[in-house]
Image 1: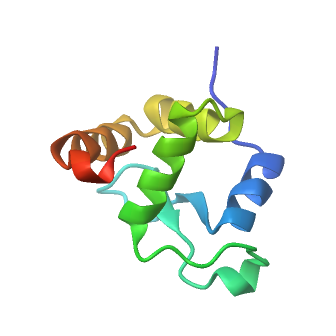
Image 2 (image 1 turned 90 degrees about the vertical axis):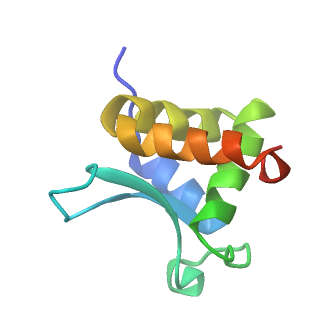
Length: 100
């Protein structure tokens, strides 16, 4: 089954202050999970995350709690940007104080 990330998912993520972004750098993975640098421009209800790592922790924590949105985000990355997914998982593993 192909993991998807649709406009409803994107809008929900944007409202939280993060999203999965298409990257233009061909040397990198096509998609990255990042915080919104200017969440107010997207109508985000939540305060901005301090950095991308805060967004990773947020998505990972809620995925572990069973959130379908956050599980879809990780599944999408695992399928479409496996290096990004492994990078996030490795960072969280190596920094357990930051994991849920």
